[in-house]
Amino acid sequence: EYVLDEGGVGSRDLYAPGREVFGISVGDKQVLWIKLHATGISGHGSQPIAENANDILLQAIARAKAIGPSNKPQPVIDEMWRKLGTFASNKFMNAVQQNTISLTTLRSGVGDPPKPNVIPSSAEATLDCRLLPGQNAEEFLSEIKARVNDPRVTYEQLSHPADPGASRTDTPLFAAIREAISKDHPGATVVPIIVPYGTDSQKFRLRGAVGYGVQPMLVDAATLGTMHSDSEHIPIDQFRLGLHTYFNILRSDW
Image 1: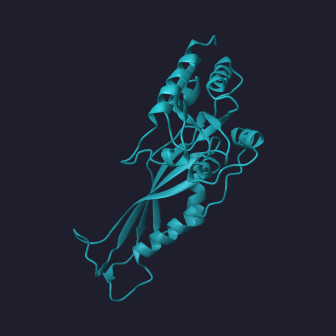
Image 2: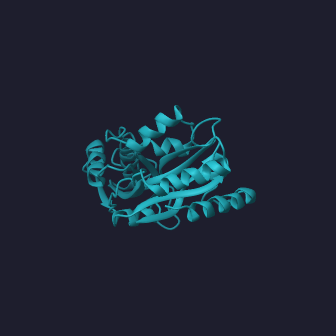
Image 3: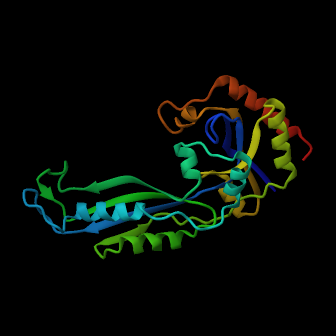
């Protein structure tokens, strides 16, 4: 019935400026990877042409990334607003509130290494799209195609996400998480959140489980920003306190 996983964390500057907030993730953003392939005309770099595949691709990417905000209801984000009143301005919170598109790879050129004086006839890129709960991936891709509106660009959908939605918070376990955090961090605000990345809970939610992501440690936004970097780290004292909080969660009567 329940799954405890990675996801939310505590911070004094990640969610709201100057407030000690613990986010409990109840949903993940969906992962949609798309490959764009542009076809043009090859030629010599000394003579620019309008049908340059690189230019076609760059224009397509710019149009895709200009896609508007989602109009789907987001009850978790709405509850965060009600409890926090204001959001911090950082890459985490910016990503949490909207569908996002990151350009992650570019590939073009003729030869190995690519020749600097040759205009290639093709170019490709991958976009890492992260979609809020309730957003249909196929509809999102269709909107990108409509915005780009260029027959010289083709698309390959590399991932096919399923949307389990968000877990409810009116459960004994969520209450136990809030109580355990409040004991170790008096005065802290505990809120449900959506995380901008994917966790294992997504698979369990698809099977009907209630999944919560909780890492009951206090970290600042800069520390969280080291995730997946070569300097990834967490404070040892907070790790130890987090173990104590987690123990109290597990031994609660839920």
